[in-house]
View 1 (tube, each protein chain N blue to C red):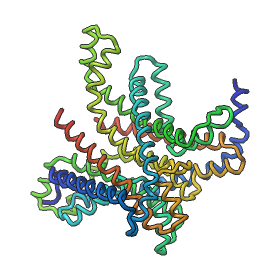
View 2 (view 1 turned 90 degrees about the vertical axis):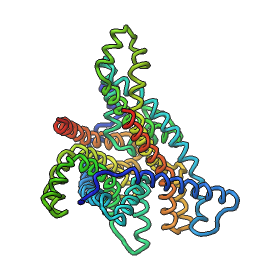
View 3 (view 1 turned 180 degrees about the horizontal axis):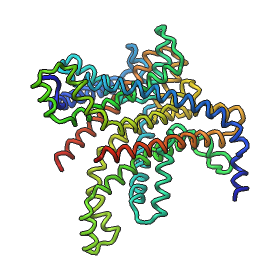
View 4 (view 1 turned 60 degrees about the horizontal axis):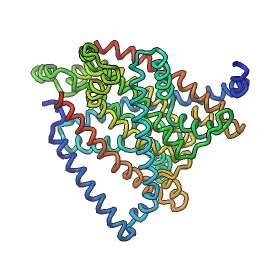
Length: 254
Length: 222
């Protein structure tokens, strides 16, 4: 045999055990840390680093909600019959997918407060807005693709049954589209979580910002940044496995 | 209407800073091309490593790939930028940036290679085995030549993504496009024009590029 033809289910099973182990160890650490702050290096740095965790998580949460809403609305508009709605949503998607998220973040945070816009946002609001609009633009393409993948016959049948466009969207199109949407949305959620680290560059005190601050006050650079990488990994990897599980389920469902 | 537009978007100023911004754009393009070359090679090595029969190779490579993919590029940039000099490895920020970019996107391209290799018909493997080809010959003469061309659209998408994502190199003081815009903004206290121009320049390159990728996609779809 020259090579493995496919990744067996055995590896996925191994992966799940691995994650459960990580979660148990992680929870144990968390409980332990609440009881008494750890003194063993490098874990003594954890309490200061984790001070930024709530910012990272709430950025992810609100960014994801905004992205989801924006993606759904824009995705539907992009499949609409009106040329105007289709072009407006198309321009939005191309602008946000065509430029870097960091540029968008800087634009929203540094340029919006100036003339002629005069819209001052807090760093947190700017972060949520940039993340939501950027990831929402990618999500819109996912929604559009899922809607397009629905067989023509179903739409023709709905028209034959004299359904209104709203009813057709709610009863026929979205329930089928959502199954296709979920795994890619899970991937976008992971991208969004990773992108929250950019908010540290506009002075938001997320975990990355805490690490940069600790670097200046404590030093111990290797420990700080290794811990930081592991913090992101421990949040993102369970999400990755969740997405894979969804993908597997979808393959069985179809 | 044009007067109003001129009032808040100073075209004179935009034209003045354009040469500087184009210099930044050149660095951005260089970083993304070098990073992409790295990602293309590392991705293939990662994909082959994960498929290795030897678990001692497959498992660690898999773990490293998953780890890199699950952590933010920005943090990886900071890691290399601050930690490497500690161990006596002093590299210019541009080199650190392209290595991190290549490594990060290598984990993405490795998935593209994986899917492409999986898509090669099983009969090709069987035929190669039946003909008693050596593993090297199977890969270089049979599998990869069939697997790689259909990957071009997906790889192209990542090249465009890397072009945009290379803006993060600004955080480790590389004078690429965004950093150039930032510097102009701080020097002149005018942010609207430089940052908007930066955005437009990104769009100017990435939009036509993604159009080309879409053309490629349509071509390989049939």
